Length: 116
Image (cartoon, rainbow, N blue to C red):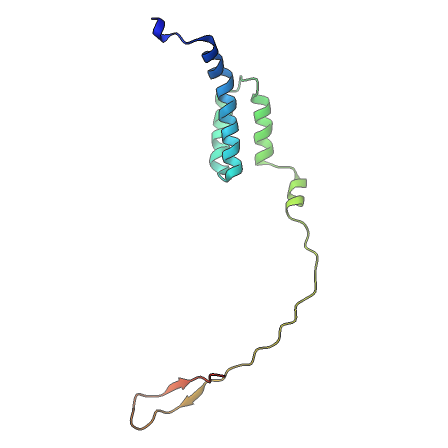
């Protein structure tokens, strides 16, 4: 019977610290690039730990991640400033030259392009 009992520090860790560590891990996963998967797991984590002391902070963080303020959009994509238009020189057009094959090789007509 004593084997099934855990020390109070372990129970406290499981109830308080482990959910915090899982939340931090999912925040890292979100910022590393798996936004959809991490956000889904964060929402599930929040619903399972709604009575945790950090749950209101987690809800706020998740809301800010999913729906950032408009100022962040403006900071990420500044309005482009028009600059000078580069001048492009026209390239010479190449005209194909159609020649007939020599009488010794009767393979039909072909197109010969100039090398210059």
